[in-house]
Length: 421
Image (tube, rainbow, N blue to C red; front, side, top):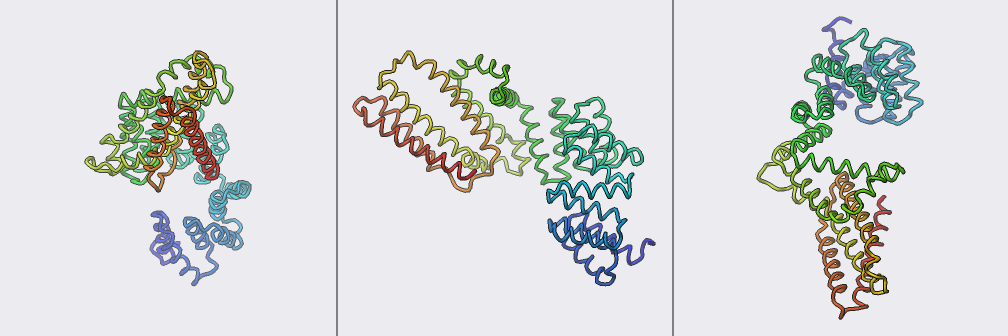
C-alpha cells in the first residue's frame, strides 16, 4: 500500500486516534470503511482494538474472530484477542491466543513483550527475562521488551544488570512515563530519594493523572524528612512483627516479647507520633503541590478527619469499654497486682490493633459522610466510663450500664463491618 493513498490515510487516522485513546472516533471511522469494504481484515482488527479500548469485550472478541475467519493467519487479530481475554480474565484463552500469534510471527517484539509480561504475572521472572531478551535480539530499543526485562531483573534482584537496562530504556524513550517510573522505583530502592522525586515528577509532567507516580513522588518527599524516615522505619518494624507472628516466625515472636513492656508503656505516644507524622507529611507544601492543592488552603484537614474519624471513634469506644472491663475485674475482687501482666499485654494488643486499623483506613476510599457525630458520641462514652469508674457513688450500676452500652455499640460496629465486607 502506497503512502498517501486513501486506504493508507484512513488507517493512519485510525491508528492516531487509538494512540491518543479516542476509541469512539476510531470506531466510527473504521465502520465507515467496513461499509465500503466488509472483507477488509485489517479494518476488522482495528475495530476490535477500538472496542477493546472501550471495554466492550464481547464485541471486540466477536470482531477479532471475524477477522480470523477472513484470514486465519492474521497474527494481529490473535494479539487483540489476547488483550481481550486478558482483560476478561480468561487465562487459557489468553495463553492460546498469544501462542497462535507467536506461532505466526515468532520474532515479533510486541508479542514477545506480551509473553514476557505473562511470565511475570505467573511469577516466572527467569522465563520473562529470556523471552524479553529474544525480543531485544533483533529490536534492541523495543520499549515493551525493555520494560519486561527491567521488571524481570528487578524481581530476581539482579541489581547490577538492571541499571544498564534502565539507562537504555530512558535513552531510547526519554518521553515515556514508564521509563521514568522504573527509574524512580530503582532510586527509591537505593535510597536516592531526591533523584526518585525528580523521576516521579517527570512522570507526572508527562502523565499528570498517573496515580503510581503521585504515590511514589509523595513517598520520596516523605523519606527526605527525618520524621518521615522514622515513621517509615517504625511502620516497617511493626509490620514485620505483626505479619511474622501471624505466620509463626520465631524471630518475630522474639521481637514481640522484647518490646512488649516498652510498647505497652509508650503505645499512646507512639500512636500520637505516627498520627502527627501522617498529617505533617500530607500537609507538606511539596506534597500539596503534587496533589494540586494551594498551600494556603486546608482541604486535606477535612479529608483527614473524614478518613480517620471512624477509626478514632472506634478507638475511643474501645477505651471506654476497656475502662469498664478493668473496673469490673477490680469490683469482682481480682487483685490489682495481678492485673499488671494482663494490662501490659492488653495495651500492647490494643495499640497494634489501633495502628493496623489506621493503616487500613489510609488505603480505603474517602467516606461520603462526616464522622463527627460518631467521634463525639464515642468521646462522651469514654468520659462517662472514666467518670463512673472513678466515682464510687455511681457503683455498681453506672459502670455496668456504660459497659453494657459500649458492648452493644461495639457489637453494632462489628456487625456493620462484616456486612460491608
